[in-house]
Length: 348
Image (cartoon, rainbow, N blue to C red; front, side, top):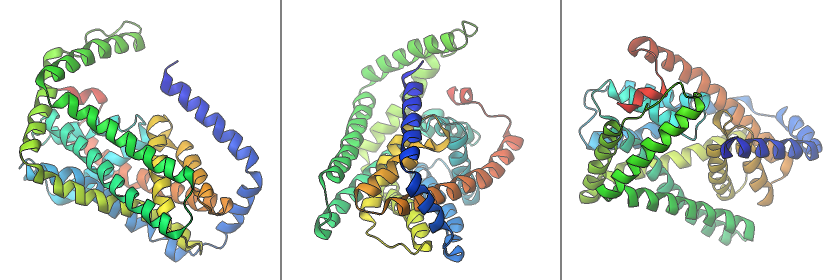
């Protein structure tokens, strides 16, 4: 049993325990849903599409600055952003499925796997940097508001620490061709070993060093170009700010529809912690762990637990349905046009 699977089992068990001990709050949350303003709640639909578009712009603005997507119409870029979110939800893998899918999609426009992956790493990196900047502002706001406690401080700086460690590790590998080649060698050896075990020896040598080395070499050259021209990152960073604020605003819309208004700063922190939890759980979109973490932190910050349950669960249900409905339509259209996608498609 893998560590990720074990972690998922433990997480789902904790969720079951939480549900048992929150029976009363769940009943109260259900009653709160009967008073929802449906017209305000409907704002979630266009807002969700807008947020996904902005999420795609973090990646496409980088490719646009590199001169790589002049052939891709803006409407197709919006569709691909929706497709990527759909794949990340139906093929949960901490974002890896979405990266593989977008690499495959962009390959149809003659964009190399290395550059496509770098664009997506820029997307995630700038989203983290933008989030960290907003968290620091949120902590200041909470301090002024007078409702700060040590758990919120701990959560805030945990997110910052995770972001910094992840970013430094990536920079360390990509900044040296020697380290990059060693890393590529480890990816091939360990990757083939895992594939062999998973397929019970039926598939051997699936990953070829020459292909993996070329993949990382493309990323290395893009990284070195970024170091020489950091202005390329301004666009993705600004889109990252808009994306984070927009994603958090989706929850505020639901709470607004329920007639609940509160300081959004704790929600921003809860959103970040929930996103991290969603990455390590193998349920679609991190379902279960995401909600549990967000509700827990909102309750700690002083929001009524039944209100937190009602607002978070209702938002997540609507957003997941929206992701599946809109994403599936464009995903199927892409499959019919370009052929079947598999994670292996991104290797070349």
